[in-house]
Image (cartoon, rainbow, N blue to C red; front, side, top):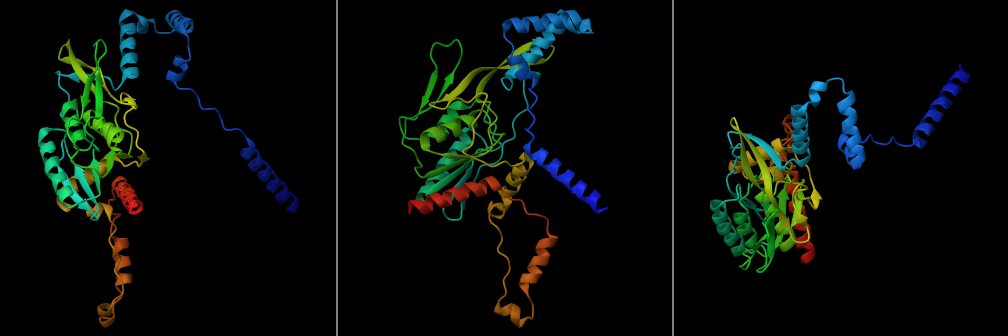
Length: 346
């Protein structure tokens, strides 16, 4: 029995050592990687092989080939090619403008939309922040589908970027010159700036985020944006179907085009979209503090001693009975950055 146990232990040890020294398996190439690796003759040969040998020749008639071609183009060029019914896409959901001062050191702004109404509220808010001499601002562009309101996005950027800055350009294939949007006013805010973005940040909101990083030294916190900083044109196909095609793209000096890669954050903090939207909905009435700051635990005090009670134990029991509180981890990280920068500047 002892010999058997020793052999088994030795076998397990050898297996463990083999597992440690075994090379990690090479990842299987994706379909796109395999196709991208083919040169022109190989591409033609592969198509000929399919035409001559695939078991269902009906899939490779002229209509089938055209459908496959369009499907492949739409997939490869996404998100620059979309199909829409009735010529109109779903209207984006806008959240109400929200501004709040966090921890006495950072002004929080959630525009809710890239439009003239939010711009007017932004001006009023920045005036209040300036009067209170706040050293930092956090601009929340998460879940903000800005569409193609690039002129309005440029106006937002002017509130933070130095006069004379090239905010971004709009490039259209076939046009002799690109359209250049610059700042022609002095900024309304000159302090520390942090921008929050995520996969729901798209279009003009992406152009704004990238411009603020390039021109106002903003730090971007959150997740990569949607990569849809483009102008779309709709082309009716008949039968109520419309093909929406990206015809112009936004580029930021030094960073280059934002399509299709989007804006990559300097500090990546992922949050489920559902959690972000729930916090947005509740913070409009409940405020942001409860989603950012931890509630201090009850401590023993003189009143508790007189009442022969221990609030620390009672507090622990109540805390365990409650569900885990919602936390805006991206905003928490942004506020941590602000706190650190303000400390080191002092």
